[in-house]
View 1 (cartoon, helix red, strand yellow):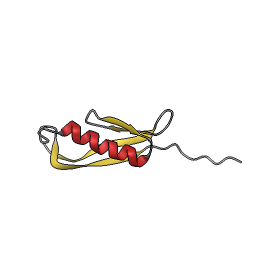
View 2: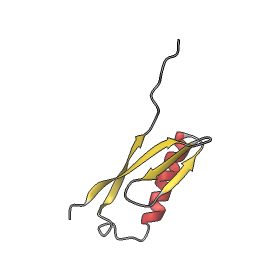
View 3: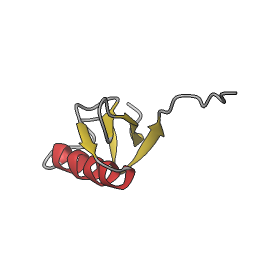
Length: 79
């Protein structure tokens, strides 16, 4: 099995305010009022989720990074 070097996640605007971050392959979801806050919360949530786990059993290298995709709606100019 090839070990992954990245944990993929995406950030999207929250339904009412702030931002929501969610990982693709591991069950981690978090939120924050700002992009800085949600990014920090995501790092902390991933660390807590993986704490004490054998990363190789999870398909990950020893020090994986988090790759984030940010979802935004296209901008449409109005006349």
